Amino acid sequence: MIAFTPWPEDDAQRYRAAGCWIDLPMTDILERQCRESAGSSADGIAVICGERAITYRELDAQSTRLAAALARRGLTKDDTALVQLPNVAEFYIVFFALLKIGVAPVNALFSHQRLELTAYAQQLQPKLVIGAASHPLFADSAFADVLRALVPDLAHLLVLGAGLEEVLAEEGLVPAFAPSAAGEPAFAPSAAGEVAFFQLSGGSTGTPKLIPRTHNDYYYSVRRSAEICRLDRATRFLCALPAGHNFLLSSPGALGVFCAGGAVVLAPSPEPLGCFALIEQHGVTMAALVPSAVVLWLQAAPERRAQLASLRLLQVGGASFAEALARRVPQELGCALQQVFGMAEGLVNYTRLEDPEDKVYTTQGRPMSEFDEVRVVDLDGQPVADGEEGLLTTRGPYTFRGYYNAPEHNARVFDADGFYATGDLVRRSADGYLTVVGRVKDQINRGGEKIAAEEVENLLLRHPGVLQAALISVPHPLLGEMSCACIVPRDGEDVLRPPLLRQYLREQGVAEFKLPDRFRMLPTLPLTAVGKTDKVALRAQTTIQ
Ligand code: OOB
Image (cartoon, rainbow, N blue to C red; front, top):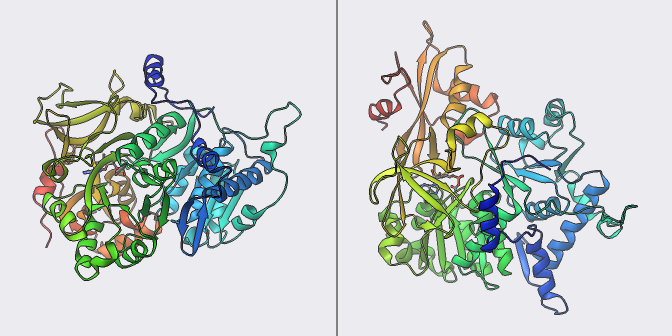
């Protein structure tokens, strides 16, 4: 079994009794669709990717074929995998294939580079790595050598565009249906109460953290989300943000769409012209965006409104969405708005489709489940009154109980009752709606992409010319926030030019979105009473033109 922090037994029993946890692996999502269409000629489309339209039966068959091929190569339950794929159909084929053999993957973002991937590989020690030749890291074999040096057990590296296709097409005995000597099927998913895969934490610390998600908890969040968003067979969902991100995978995301028998239309990016064309071509009914992408859609829409005729619902989440922009969505894009405030760690809040306008425009919704427990507390952990600002803490049937292999960090972010401190500052109304007003975690939310300040600061501090470094957020009209590195150079250091520092960071192998947008050179950094860098003061004295 892959190690993770379980829920206390009485909570687990409660979640089962209530029907949240149904003790089925997530492979049930596909099996159910295939069962329901068995005998009928109707085989609905599951995924549209470029010119390809893949039906549910094909998705099931292809993922089984890949599962079998991987099982033949010795991959088995409790192994882990590191996967980095762009928004292509293979993302879902691989995801289900790995679920079918009980191999738990982590889906790295396509924007991730060497530093992020090696951090995940080091923590997970995967037996399998799947990448894409369209990513610079997998364009040649240099990175494979780096990975092999870090992960002695790494047995297989498959690259889309350089070999993975052949494995996908491989014929041969399907071991699932060929009982082994002991009469057991040669592969099967991990137990529903165990880790299905790992989500990525937005992070606020030096090392990126992994979030174990079990079948039971994740499958529940997917089913409940699909219900709230009223997905059905007619749903055509545009996935234009990274397919592995929790929002696009489960809120309700592609997995929610698969539960309902609808279709996922993949887009390489949220860039409006390409997305509008896909919406028109495929009759897309629903899309999910971060606020910065909504701004681009609003700019592009007036000339092209007719292309959006089929769009019924736009979900917006991942970062704060200004009320003034929210109000423009129905008017200018011709669809309903749903705000989504979620996190890879679990808790997801939605405004409901039937909510009055003021709720939809001014709040980030309320928890999806009646079993979500939310406590809004002050700095001493004492509950604050409704309507007052406080720190959001939560526990529930799909909120994790511990980061992977991170006991010290877990001790900091969970209280004695198992409530997870999200790091978000919120106000809760008497009827349970949350409005996000800020955050206490040391993170920059750059248009929905999360940057852990400490991670970038540590990289900057490795530069010989940098004495001190603090990464802060500064307002940005499109992204909401961008990052600014405040740097105290070492004595006599006069060549710390921003382009060179950025180049230095790039050479460290960090994702491009984490490179500071701005640099400020300072003689000293302001300190708090206890001697820590005073980022509040730094932000207050940093104005960017
Ligand atoms: C989603 O997940 P993550 O893990 O990338 O980021 C979570 C953090 C939250 O703790 C909060 O700080 C911020 O992103 N956030 C929002 C927000 N939605 C997320 N801040 C303000 N308003 C919102 N609507 O971002 C995520 C996961 C599932 C569904 C939607 C978003």
